[in-house]
Amino acid sequence: MLTQPFADAIAEAEKIITEAPHIRTEQDLLEGYDYLAGGIRASLQMAWAYERDFPFFTQSTGPYTKMGLDNPDTLYFNANIREDREYLVTGVRGTTADLSFQILNGDYSPVVVPDSLAAFDDRAIEIREDGTFEIRFGPGKAGPNYFTLGPGASMLVVREVFSDWSERKGEITIQCVDTRGGAPKPLSRDAMAKRYGVAGKILLSRLKTFLAFPKWFYLDLPVNTMTEPRPTPGGLTTQFSSAGHYDLTDDQVMIVTVPNAGKETAPYQGIQLGSPWYVSLDYINRQTSLTADQAHTDPDGKIRFVISERDPGVANWLERTGHAHGYVQIRWQRLTRDLKPDDGPEVEIVDFADLPAKLPFHTPITPEDWAARIAARQAAVARRMLG
Image (cartoon, rainbow, N blue to C red; front, side, top):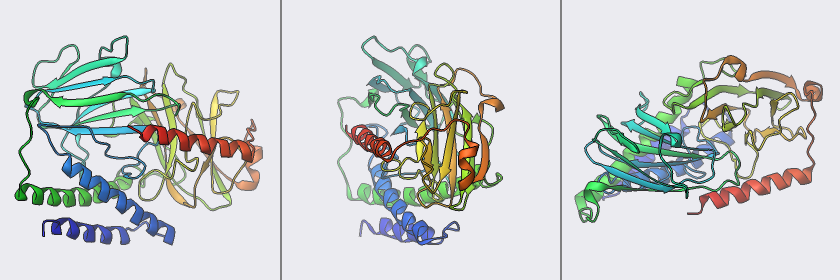
């Protein structure tokens, strides 16, 4: 059977899920099976998209194919490439807060984060007045809108980041210049068998890798704290992040206070919660993330986020959605300067009953306004997923 290697990989993946050490509740286990389903979808897609001579962009992660503490505010695209070919990337710049490009050497694995051979945002390219652009990646010498592919270059990753979810997304395509006008080889039985085998390997690597990430970057940190802003490991040159993990009772609240960096420093600033599976919580139907544009900034220039299971009745409530333990991360992108400790968050754990006294500026929200917020999130993600 051509599909047997993939079927065997699914069985092994299920064992990885059911034996995950962080499972405490039935909800954790069921979310693991949901995570597995997303991994299966993504692995098949990535195996069938492995066309380095005839590449196209795919979304490696999204609302239903989550991995790697995916950012709710980001569209992720990737295309497979090879260092000895030339590629033409064309697009239309949307109105989003950030558009960035990254060339990776290899892929993520359970023991290593791939090297970033190059990373830049659209400030490094020439964009026409109508928003269109053309950039090239290849073995040639770097120049205007031409970027050299270094040894081992294997993947081009594009991130488009929304600060206001009503922003208009852009367009992007990729072609291999050397093969334009041609066509890939017809399918063969051997090629099809190989794809199912590759899909199985991708699935298992994906699960093992991102279950290892929390140990690398989070779990050695003291619980209920967050780090100072720092360059994101394996990330973009113009991105800083602050990371932490929480463990709270339903009567406890985590208050995260951070300065609003402002558009001149960081056009994008956002916070999110993540589950023990190291993926975002439901950000479509629940407020589990906020950007600086979506959040309420207090008169002193600071944003106070309230992470709580119970509804505190404030605008900046981040819903735990039944997750007593999980991850919290703040990202700043398109930075114009390095961030300092004073730019980062302060964390305080308080009893739910004591919360009002801990918020110097009360930002109440009515149930009707809250429902309107959720409806706006649902509509914005639906628009974003079209096309």
